[in-house]
Amino acid sequence: MSSVTMQTRPLAPLTMPLSRWLRDGWLLVAALGLVYAPTLWHLAKTWWTNADYSFGLFIPFLVLFFLWQKRDNLRTLRAEPMRFGLLVIAASQIIYLVGYLGAEFFLQGLSLIVLLAGLILAVRGWATFRESSFLLLLLVLSIPLPAIILNAVAFPLQLAASSWAEAILHLLGIPVFRDGNILQLDKITLNVTEACSGIRSLASLVTAGVVVAYFLPSRWWMRAIFVLSTIPIALAANAFRVAGTGLLGEFVGEQWANGFYHLFAGWLVFVASFCFLCGEWAIIQRVYRRHRHAAGVQRPPAAVGPEAPVHPRPLLVGLINRRIVIPSAILVLSLVLRIYLSAAPVAPVRQPLANFPRQVGNWQMVKDEVIDPETLNVLKADDYLQRIYQNSEGQYASLFVAYYRAQQAGESMHSPKNCLPGAGWDPVESGRLQLGTDAAGRPIQVNRYVVENSGQRELVLYWYQEQGRVIASEYWGKLYMIWDTIRSGRRDGAIVRVTVPMLRKGDTSASTAALDLVRAITSYLPRFLPN
Image 1 (cartoon, one colour):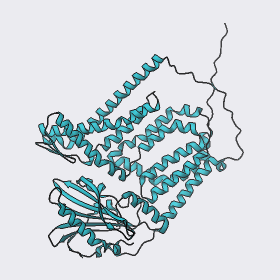
Image 2 (cartoon, rainbow, N blue to C red):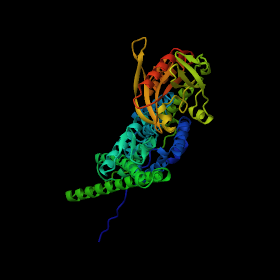
Image 3 (cartoon, rainbow, N blue to C red):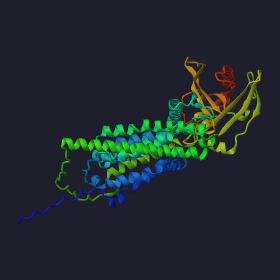
């Protein structure tokens, strides 16, 4: 009887073994650490302090786990370095500098993921990038979204949650009246605040959906549909949570709709959503297996090719390896540009806001308010003004101006849509108002924002002012700041906000008074917010 001896092909060696990476890659690691140390610190701090992104703490460990699982597959992939990866690395640093100049941490964090993608392409090639693309996607999901996007998403989600909850309560025969994001029941009033918008559960469930989809054996489009299904699941679960809170407050007691019970309901709803997601995963698994079994599809045996050739070690290694030197040089150049652009900015001559006139048009100052140190620490403004004015008709209005001499990430103008909801004011309406036209005939617009707290409504008009420009859009404010930094070295800017109480819903006198004060102060602002 003859016997056959089976021999397995040894794993192909990595293009650069770990020992050589440790010896030759120190420059790249050092450059990456110098450029991205502030970004990594901000990410870790956000994951630890922001409940909306606390799931980000688990992402690095998940990535390491999947990387360990894929280690054999990654080692057997043929290394085919691509020069295109260097272009991706260069693009990542352009994104980083745009995020740095625009005081936007999201772009800085995103550039790190793009940099990792470029390094994979430049060192290992397309096959390795494709195999590790799932890990890069997980890292992207861990980056906190910019406030601009959150502001645009939060309010529609609040309206959706309140509208769906209203429909659920009507189906159950519970009388309810909805006014925006406020639900009025017989014994309780529910205010669907930003915290109840479902952003937190939506972000967490989408991330969980991506992880679960990884274990689906089906095709990529089926995985994409599975991940997209997490969005309606999260929205429906949040609507049921709001409706359930209303039922508890209506029939059990208002204390059951607040505090610990309200928080526990959020956790319970998320667990239920995740269980539903796992059930969907199990159904897809079963259907896919039956389909493969009926079609008689079997996984083909892995082909064993010739052993990868081992090239002789070059005499000159270390820093001469271009796959190390070129990415390191790009990072060093990015660091030098950042240091150059962050040099002492041009400080324009201006008067302090404390000298702002006490009488402007028909308005007389009645109170000069002082902001508490805790709020100032969050605001991080170089100069501010907080005053109460009164017109001849006895109507009151609040004027707030915050000036930043050199804006940077964490110390820049931010929308009232960020701070007012955190102070208990819930959005009711949002839009734009036109003040007139500038010298070139372009319309001058400001933001109109109606908020409510404990039945009291206020009208807020605000805009961003940079070097004489009146800017309503936060997007354009960022772009102008980037352009001004490159063109003139100036990074100063301010936010101007006028707030008027509304006596009733649809109060037109509040809008008239606010516009009157806005027009009265515009002629004085250039002395304090220089052109």
